[in-house]
Image 1 (cartoon, rainbow, N blue to C red):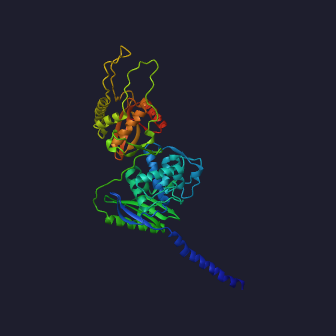
Image 2 (cartoon, rainbow, N blue to C red):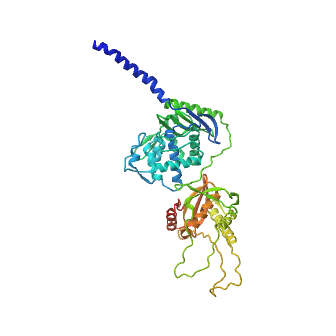
Image 3 (cartoon, rainbow, N blue to C red):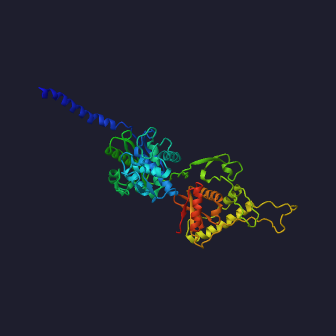
Length: 493
């Protein structure tokens, strides 16, 4: 009788468990709202959108921004791929997915990048944040500055890994914009997102999106994400016959259904995108570094009248905080010193824009830069020539002569002067030359005699000081870093 009496209870439990597995669990997985967007990566045109501007939980799609900031820091010399990063207790304690790093362990930055991009490791993402900015909170603020600069208008980051946190939200549109910038702004790193497996220093890891990468023709990235609040998210990119499509899905019900939806959206993109379209790369934001930026008002009648009355942003590190006139050496003879207004110098520099941007062979570049240096010197001399001295002035020394203004840019290849210092990469030649001038004025002691050179790259214009010895380049870079100016040495090539 007792056994027979328990049968209704047992069957009730079985029925409840079945209901839970068939109804409740699927409903919880589908609780995250759906959003999707398809974009032609070549020109940024949106080909499909649904709930694309709804702010949702991005999950590990967040790591796309984490890696974007890390790539920016590496390219601008804040940190090296081979630098060793010490893992904090906070980073080691992050929940899965993780690489399994231990507190106190050291690991090269390049392996943390691989683990975050391929394995989507949360401990690696937090370690990257701490290595770049010192803390995850400070890194999140930099992520938000970068998102704003990229045009991600409805995104706010709270952490580097994407685990659910109040206020940590993004949209399908913003994540697609970010994926496009990753492809165009850092093409040298983009191959990370297509690696099926990679070695992450402590072990080999497999890509979280390997199923789509292996099954969809032309797929080469980018990032998956999943949390209970977000559902199954994915930003994917594929290229076929010169056409590149990026698609983002938020709120998938499972890995399988999400991949199927993304494949459907990519197919839609390839069917709608024209075979030929003018390439319009997204504008790469200016590098702000750790310091951010400070607004500066350009006064009317300044060096660039077209900017008069407008607010522009210059790196805080470039501001001159004290007088740069050096003290005379004890016992040395004093010679007349000519002080020029910075606007005069900038106007002279802009008037000598026929100085070269390096694109040819080394011999051609040396000849062109020497000619450009002569033109700059002559233009600056003309711009800062003083008014004639009144004839009724009596000189204190009978031996003194009229002061002569001379600006010389020396180019020397003797004595091991094959080294240089890079102070950043900028979106325009004008901006690179402007920063070179500002930096030269702020660090006369070690940069005097070096050659200011702008080198054109596929992703911008490098601002370099060249013609230095290794010791002088090292000293100059260390002194600039002490002034919060980001720089790195350039060796003989």
